[in-house]
Image (tube, rainbow, N blue to C red; front, side):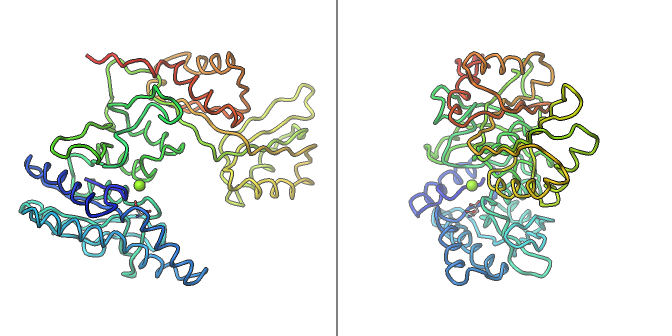
Length: 409
Ligand code: ASP
Ligand code: MG
């Protein structure tokens, strides 16, 4: 069971969390709990480090920002004990949760769970501090912001857990952002792959790396709400690697990402090697290019190239291309930051024809212009003006009949 910052924001909520844990214990489960720091606490600690010195030792930063989880893991263990449940806290170094030495963004290498497994078998609840680990130099590391999800999945994989339940302030994963589409509904089940696409595209429910890890180690994940009656197991969304339904729908969700920017080069010579002259320098500058559109030229002389980069890299990308003006010999350089990428996701696309056509027809009928398109086996993404985001998401959500009442037997 993993509980995020809002779930452990104060003692009242920690007591509520303890009731969820107690339910699982009563039902005869061996339980390991991973906790985040209290909501806002990690931000506070990060700010303190910056205030202490704008440029600071990353190892000391980790020593400081990892401490919020020490507090919540200890407090939850105390509350559980006060309820008569045997429990103890575990910090990352005590397990040990071994990571590499990339302070502030460490990757987990191995978890030694021998003692933990023994204690669990004796009926002791393990309350593990999320987000933290131990470097090869025996220094405290952290996994990057939001990293407690990753701690939980890694621990579930290492323990061979039946399931990893991520308790949070939403009751599951939705067909799209419910703030935009009122008729969005909670998905009872989706696949790891679909969740990975959604998380990568900005659905904030889960840390992207935790989903990657769950997919790799085939850990079933369940996203469920903390804020329910703890006497009953809350419903949620089960995320698994299995084939989900016999009659798989082609599309399960619509996601959108606002942090995209578009770059277009006009009148680029249509000659071998030109793509490399554009994308080579971008890659050398560590700028991630996502969508790419290149036209063929009518007369075999000049063409246009359009691509997208993360909005945060836009200025750098424009500067890189500008610096290559002589080499690329383009006519005009145009950029646009007010764009959004909307994606249609579903593993069922693999076996359904015409999925993309449905999107293009629906968007066209609404007068929404598509600037660029990319597709993968389980995803179609279109780049559009950000002013049309809401309309596009709603249009696609109903075009794929996601807002109808599910026909559940
Ligand atoms: N407390 C850490 C953060 O805020 C880790 C987490 O909550 O997942 O980033
Ligand atoms: Mg989180």
